[in-house]
Image 1 (cartoon, rainbow, N blue to C red):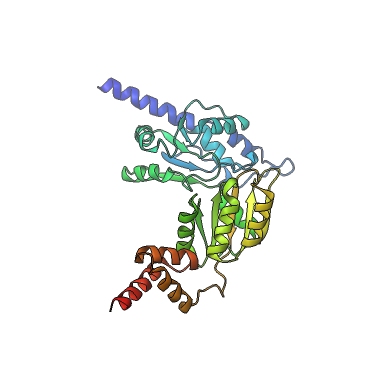
Image 2 (image 1 turned 120 degrees about the vertical axis):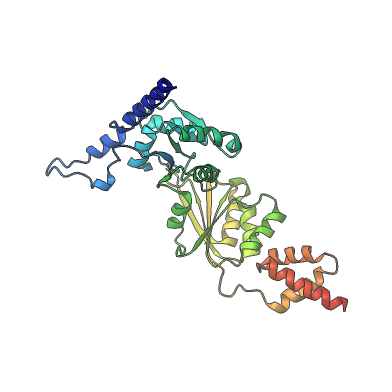
Length: 330
């Protein structure tokens, strides 16, 4: 037993020494020396001499490989295990930056339940695990939060290495207010559910950020114009890449453009402005529409439909429908 404990201690010590070695990223930092006055980059920009134990959530480029940070390169070089959304994508990124790593493991939405405990075994043994997605910051629209929950449950530190994100990049390029915004992810693919879902967020007083498939872009824009009102918006594609495009206009104008032009190429992000000041539905109109719907639909169905059509909260629509139903029954 004592001998096996010594062997395990020796392995952990060897790993720690490995993580303390100079990396390609630290050499990049040293390259920041000015040949004229000998000055260097600030201390805060230098990689740590030794990585602390834990899970490292590492942001990677959303398109342009040069957008990776020095700290990300340093962590990816020294991590014992890299958990990837797609090992092929991450392997290509590492190769581009001259990093050779033999321990890439798959971790994504479809295998997170099984892969998470295996990654925890590495973390519990004292190893460093880096978590990356195919592009951008992990945990935004991916299952990384599940791994972070497992770490918190076992008191394993979680570290963030910030960097590129399609959400913040889109907000910068869209030119809409950013003092308050909400990331909404992908809208539902079916029109009925999509309109209901949009109705639930229509009253949110913030700029909204969506991801969307190019094939569904025109139909989503049409539903947004119908449910959210004709708000200012921006459709962005291929961000940080050679053919980056930011198309501005009202939701109706953008819908008309993509209906005529067809699906764009590349990944799409949409930014939609907050509710317009004059966009509140008239109470009398809502009441009349609800009464009409309640002739053929249940309270729940009528409330869901009116919420999608007008943008009012479903709970408010439901309470109004209940009141009308009670009034009619007396």
